[in-house]
Length: 138
Image 1 (cartoon, rainbow, N blue to C red):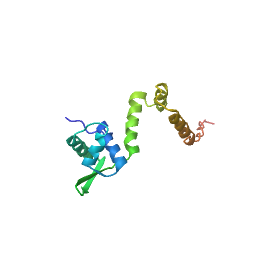
Image 2 (tube, rainbow, N blue to C red):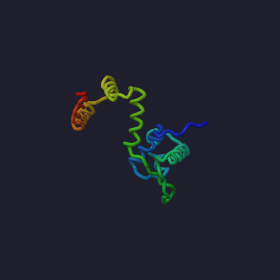
Image 3 (cartoon, helix red, strand yellow):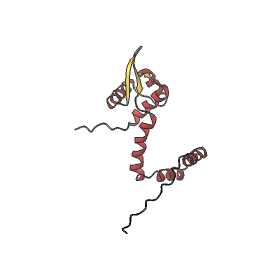
Image 4 (tube, helix red, strand yellow):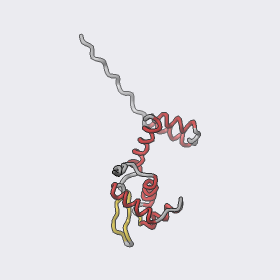
């Protein structure tokens, strides 16, 4: 029995989504050309992947002047949130702090990255919630 398709995009699907997010609605040939700038891909492989993505609901297609125009139905944040949650859960036991610590330890964060993280943390700090008072029997 085949397993159900994942809600998260595969690596190949994510590559196609990135092309569509950057370029907007595109014909198959334009998608293949953009992907070929990074690595060689076959047109038939991209067409098959787009059909799978259509079934999953991550892309849509419309008639264009010379064939179908493909467009992303999921946004960048929606697509990457699931992947990030999966990475956090599987590799870091759900801890974003462990992920950031790993990036810092590996030297993967530039000064600009670190400054942006600090800025995000400062601007997105939630006010401390009041502590719940315990109910005591009189």
